[in-house]
Length: 616
Image 1 (cartoon, rainbow, N blue to C red):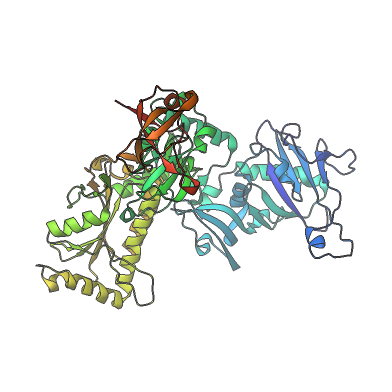
Image 2: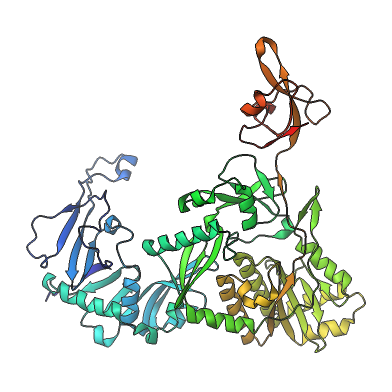
């Protein structure tokens, strides 16, 4: 046995993959011809780049010769009916993305680590798109690494192994690959990999780390390809299972609209972000059956104001939400990534959240703001209307109760007091989209926590109540705040059926909501989820470009021009360039309504790709 510990980075190839079919077609490796200690049947591929000076040598005009070279190797090691790859240096990217097991390193690590001797964890919260690394100076358990099994995913874990594995390796870091220090000779590699294969097959981690596997990212390209194909088919079929959601917080006080990009033609503005709007953008003449997942990914959706001015843009694919249900698991796509969720955890979520759903005591939403004849959602209008129509409610939308010097914290959108003398804090949001709701749920937590912990916040809330008390009794409405008798009510304005309970919410919204509910339980604050029917008019599209009526005019030598008809915003007779052939080749006197825009130096133009109408 070797007396020196050496670092190894180990991958496990999928069934059917080995040295002959696992390297990318255009790789920078060459197969080694001579190796005296390579295990039997193993293959060695070497990266042997010629030396060259670093970029900063010329940058600083250093005279001294400073050659450096990048070296590395991949060893393909058959073990039983599988094949391992040992990676040395920065060369593993020469492997095909779909040839190795993406959960190998993490599963072996989970099966071998002592749960009380963990040192570091890389964690991701997919609902909030937040990543973090937590490291501790002394060995500890997963709780002290700030891991929330109900909402977060472990991407990598490091720690000391259980006593029975100390002879194999003392510590391990696992993600797709397994990183360990081994004190062995090359002849012992096969035996070590046989032990790793046993560890990978074991389900002991389900006992040691029972909550880790609830949600895992699906990175295997072969699995993702199948899931993407199912997503595409559901899109082609207009399936109700598929929905569209901006992966960011959208404030409907801003009269936010959207535009789609990718097909060309005139740019319409849509007053609601929805899958129906995207279908409308594509048009009835678009052959969905010819669509590929790559083409679908090429479309984008941009948030804009009512005038069509873009603020942010996202790939349409990254905005899809979909659950694909299988007997023992559920696959969920969110922000362009697929996640595998344990079916038992899905049932646990539903059971818990359904028990928190209540019928709403608020009236239906039909309170759009109308700008230039177009309806836009308005939470502000709705909150004000509730307080005006139902006297027991006080509107606290856009108010602030935070301590001096702190960022603004809104106590709630609507405030009322129940017959049981409990202060009801209503937090409302239009839509059931994941990013919106996660923000809403966290608002409820932050507000409640401040009211419990900070007397200054309670005093600020009482001042807001007194200023808006109306005909209500001041003492009746302020006493529950002093007594910290609070209830948080989340109200979601939606066209979905309230009888569907928590099934109306996207997966990561459910996860976020359960976490918030449990946090409120710890503060002994009851909470509920309600649905408020959206009966407002369907949101329409309109063009961000103005229109003008033009006429085809004969000119000298048989030429034709398209000119603006008198009595409109543009000067009569102004020439319009860029018209399509149908318009330009029409007989003189033909009139059309076309979209137009201004180019450089104020030149008026249209586009042959834009829609037009024939004017009688």
